Length: 128
Image (tube, rainbow, N blue to C red):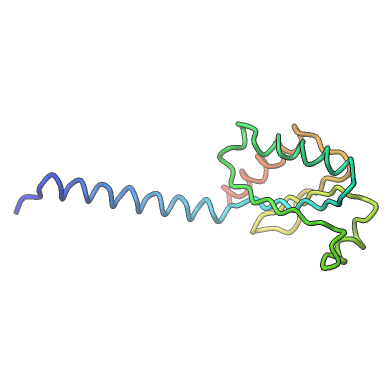
């Protein structure tokens, strides 16, 4: 029995979908988690946020799956982080599923260093 061209096309589409699904699952496992500890009325935090956004949108990291969470340390539910970082904000934790905090940036962020850290962590994730 000979496959029709439409059956063949459906098989090819199914294969592409499965392949994409596997690639997406692999990408998901190597997500780089960014936790940005900030507070209102903080000029350092505003500047750090701008630099962080520039680093995230840099073409050299567009293939890295970054998950950014902003944490307002002034929110009462974040008292633990307020106690830890009230004099150090802004703070950025760069983490991966395999490790605890790998990198920590405080006060002044440098775009080139952030990009370098994102790339370094992604390459570590790919080798594990």
